[in-house]
Amino acid sequence: MRALPFLLVVWISMFAPAPATAQRFGGNYPVCMQRWEWGGSSSISCQYSSWDECRALTVGLSAMCLQNPYVQQPTPPVRNPRPR
Image (tube, rainbow, N blue to C red; front, side, top):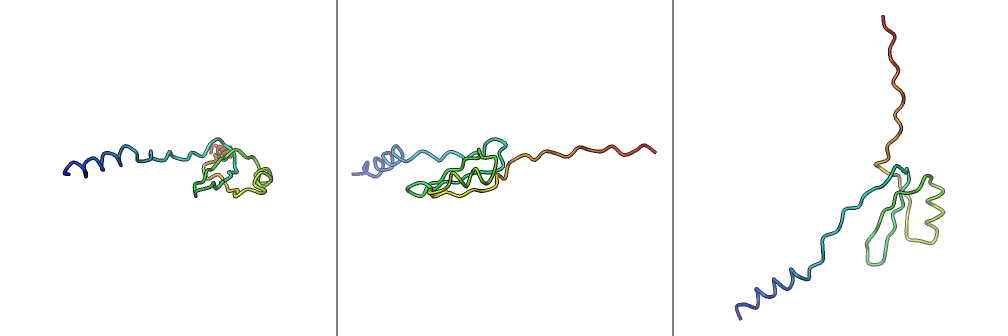
């Protein structure tokens, strides 16, 4: 009887779900689509170059478009000041 709690802990740890993987925002596309799936999970894919492209694909889905927070904007050229 003393082994029962120990076996229960071992059984739970063996069949516990694996930890979730981190969601990565990919590429240098400015628009992402977040899509909700059955069971409450969601996924984000950042592969859209315009809002219209993303919105066209979200029609009829439980999804929404959002701005990619990790997109790298082009840096403006640096002007050198005139020497004095």
